[in-house]
Amino acid sequence: MLLTEYEDALKEMHAIRSGEQGVLRIGYLPTVPNALVPGACRQLLSERPAARLRLRRRLARDLVDLLMAGELGLVAAPEPTRSVGDMTFVEFFRDSLSVLADETHALHRKRNLRLADLADQDWLLPGPNILLQQQVDAAFERQGLGPQKLRVETDDVAPRYCICCAVRRCSA
Image (cartoon, rainbow, N blue to C red; front, side, top):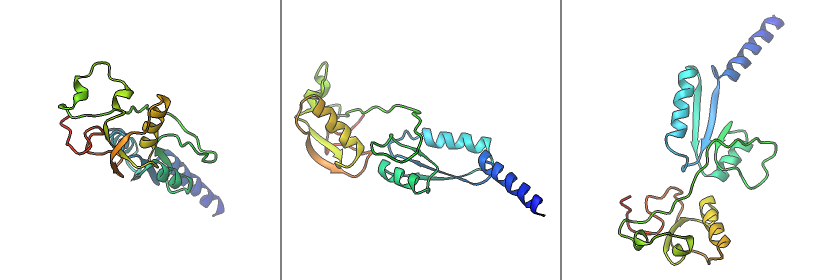
């Protein structure tokens, strides 16, 4: 009986490891491209019909905390700047930061646009504890520019308004 239970336990562990059984808990950022996570999930579910998924869409710091607490098994987020124990990080894509402006904005008429050209513009950005804001701050600092003219602060990391438009809806 002990041998049978041992063999059953090994089969169950193999099924969990292969994705045939168990729940894969994945966390990802709101800014991760929409097709990336659902596309990967569709592929996984077609390869492992018995697999179950639990998705969490959160900010990076929350995802790392959930990962460290064992509530997530995989996270798609920027590599944290703080130490997170013995976690392993694998780069699977590079993200780029773009500045958007309404098509009627004066910046569209400017040739060879530089970061300095954006220094006196009104900005819509997330709060200072959000990685995006920190990246923009760092870019301005590297260029020796003062802080941005923050007109609108939002907790939405994927705002529906453009950064330089502040309060106007972008047609882009």
